[in-house]
Image (cartoon, rainbow, N blue to C red; front, top):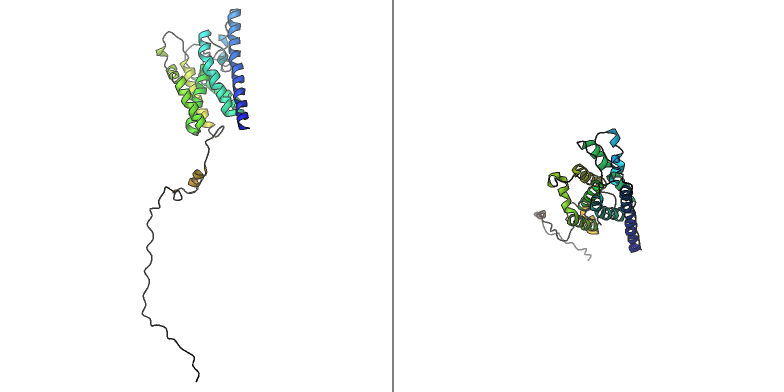
Length: 243
């Protein structure tokens, strides 16, 4: 039964973010076929007209290469979110999406327009990594290591000087990573948790761990009081005698 449930969650995650990724490609296809650009719907920092970008910026990409770079990590990290966090995944995705966009609008500088799902990708990666560390749940920790292995190089996205010929929204990357960490800490009690074994519960009840088999009680035993000596005679034995 449990195997069937996990399989269902996995399929759901693949379908949801598979459809979402395909939708991003549909938008880019419409732009290419019609010769138009929806980049005007991106985030324009500190401009009222740029507030709509909080909602639409992750759906828009500058070119095919930009979308290609975001598609695989978005699909993998998003599907994992649905698998591990089930009913909470929609709320978490919305929070990561909106908080990242809002912080970019508020804190980014310059006259540029910020578009792309990379902020959301960074938010998802930071969320998964932080959750695995603070929850100490084996599956999440294993996935955290996978995130580092696959996307550890994403850290260079915080430094635009390494890519002088590309207009990288490092603010989206940074705000996404911070949002992922903050939301992971805030939601640390939701989703999968590390199993608590019986010996751990006993340890919680006994803060000194004195009941554990590997802990030796080193407290000295109280000295036994010495017996008191009194000068006393042996008891006199009397017999009842009748002549």
